[in-house]
Length: 117
Ligand SMILES: [Zn+2]
Image 1 (cartoon, rainbow, N blue to C red):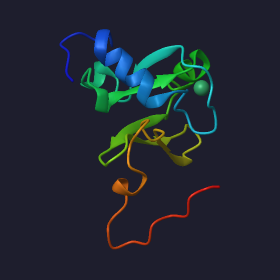
Image 2 (cartoon, rainbow, N blue to C red):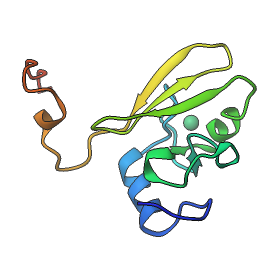
Image 3 (cartoon, protein in one colour):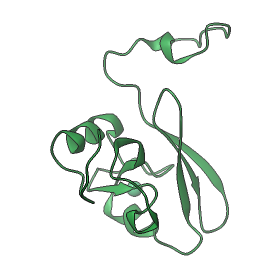
Image 4 (tube, rainbow, N blue to C red):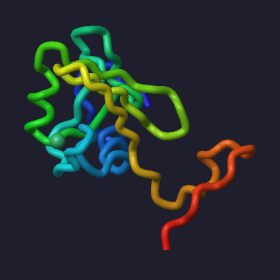
């Protein structure tokens, strides 16, 4: 999914909203109000699903604080590396997509994680 504009719209917008389900800033979990570039478009970040994250309005503004850095981490599920202005590093992984096979995202050689009852 790729677009030439800076706006996330149409099917790409719907996909990101379904994928993220809530604000992707670690420990927030607020209601989605903005779709944001992980790497800002002014810094060359593309308007693509891999470079998008859903945010509440507060976190979208906070992300612009000096020293705040984010980057996508390639993998089975959309994951962000977030370095805050205080230089604390966190990751934010999107929830599993509805209907996905629980074990498919883990290596075959690793024991499967326990399911919650
Ligand atoms: Zn938030």
